Image (tube, rainbow, N blue to C red):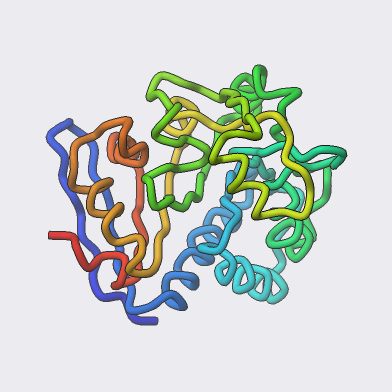
Length: 253
């Protein structure tokens, strides 16, 4: 496993630093991502995890599933919280939950009672649910080319939000994007963890790979903290790790 470097960004606000880890390639990034999740699981206590779906963590989840077969971990200790959801017409689960079931929950053998589903019916009480469960121990996120994290898009997010709802209209670009990602008809809304929910977690990990993410990574890590680049706010969290392959880090100073 080859790590090119580990760097600590020191911010002026006391007690806050950002750990930046740059790896040689996507495979090493995936191995480290799996290790971070596995180390949390190994603490042998209830662990509340919010882990992203999508292309970035797919290899990490395969590695994690293989490693869990080799160790005797208690699956009942891990509880999972999907940090966003896009409703789909006439479907039990939305787009995110369908992806997580396929990529993570089923391969890891996670039981339904350990999955705390976020949806359009319960989003208004979900922050309270997280608090009652002891808070989120780890949130693993990717970053979009526009700087979004979870469902926090620049055009409608606010740093003041907890879990919130965004209506989706068939005329919206987001609707068209979602429609191209699934064979099912998109619903009328998306719900997502907002900034306040994410900053309330105990540990954050942001992962990105490939040169296509290099420009937005530079903006998020070295530019101003602004709602125009939503992920820039993650720098204010006291325990955040950014894990990149070398292509995603090429523009960093």
